[in-house]
Image (tube, rainbow, N blue to C red; front, side, top):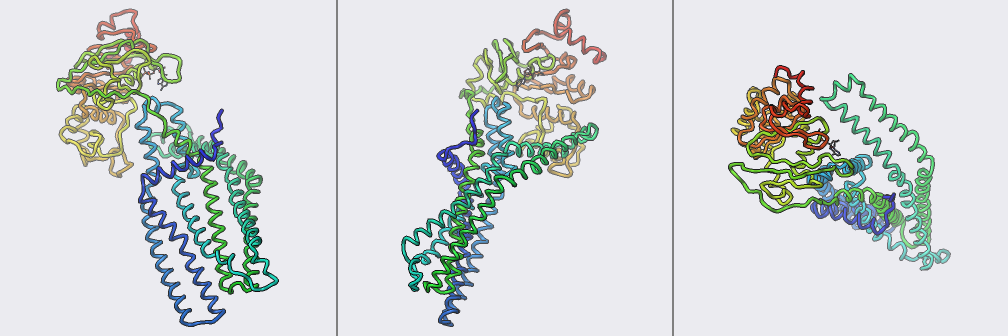
Length: 620
Ligand code: ADP
């Protein structure tokens, strides 16, 4: 297996550059404000360092009053101005960066929504998305980190420039003392610089080695994080609260704590005592060695008369900042190297191509809703599976009729609908709309031909009217009409805010908590509002009580009007009202006909299912 963690420095650079560029291109104002903030933030301490040195030099030397006043006033004014500008820039930058996390999540959800459904539905894709989320959550790695790295890197860079500017004269000013004249020699300066550079580089390098622990443990940390969010979501769900209590599903907590303890008590402490701790300790020692050399050099030069006592503080501070800047930049580069592993995973997800053929034919808009759909020898296998979920299905829908698709669980009913909505393309055969292969149509337009109520539909915690229209602006009369047809208008009318009532309490405390049956009726009203020529109802009555179910299917004609309805159910009693029933069994269409025809066919699958269910529906 390819080890994803081994990335060449060239690829590393390319990945990080792409990530920085992605942010810069999309949010230029954020990057300008951050750049300016980093500049003022990094340089403002040098004002105090420089002027303090001048003041001490003057105090220890000629004590010129005018000059001292000039230094103090300039120091105060410059400091005040720098603070003001810095805090303004900080506010600007913070305001712009506040939604960064949201931008990132949106990028992921936009990609998920725009990718071919068959890819989005694939387990491997779910794994990838989950991994990307976990990465962001447990250590702030991935794309989110890039912005903070960029800010830190710039700050360190400016810090280094400031330090360099204030420490240059340290190497140039000669000592007068003959005994220390060797300090003026270029070779001595070169040696010293090399020594300093060596120590500066070693410290962040060792720190990066220590930090490598995070990337090495990411799989385990992701597992802890996954458990954490799962446990959090589980305990926060109103719907499952009862189930959790009865079945003591807080067992998940036990798993979570076991996993966490094994990470913290075992692995963390092992790493801390071992290589990681050693690397961090050496890194700290290296920076102390550096300070020792700097102090020695600066003090010797001051001793030798190269500069005044005030400049000692300036040089010590400046050269420490210079080293800190270089070290900080190297540390950020090291972290960028580690982050590349996560960025790579993220970009692999963003780069998943859409392979489904996108046609360009426009779907003819017909006021008479006269559309005809044909399945011609259609077979289908889910990606990565061997067995056919649908095999050799041929079927024509008559316009304006009600077609029921029945069969046991797993017989292929939902797959049939997924193919019809072109969420997947058939492996063999063709699906035709008005005689033309559906692949040739513009996909958006083709989708407008269908309104679907899926089994696991989702309503949003928004006002009811907006849910019906799936938009903020909607026609009230039409929404009301659809709710009436779905048989839930009276309930909506009784709500205090009518169509403006929020569903659920997530977004509004006054929101209504509705039953499963009511949800289903609202979902049906939503499908009716789309006013598409085909209305597909996938197990639309599964959450309804028998009375409500009976009410829905006896009023099916009223609900459906002149649309073509495709009604999927394994409850045969609710399909009796359809003009035509097709029976699926193990992916094949085994029977077709009206209820009377099918029920009279003695050895047929329909009759077998009917008899098995008859006892439950004896009176209906
Ligand atoms: P039904 O709607 O009649 O209950 P489905 O169409 O959902 O049946 O499933 C038909 C067959 O396809 C089943 O064997 C099911 O396990 C399989 N199947 C459904 N969805 C997937 C999927 N996403 N990946 C792989 N196999 C699937």
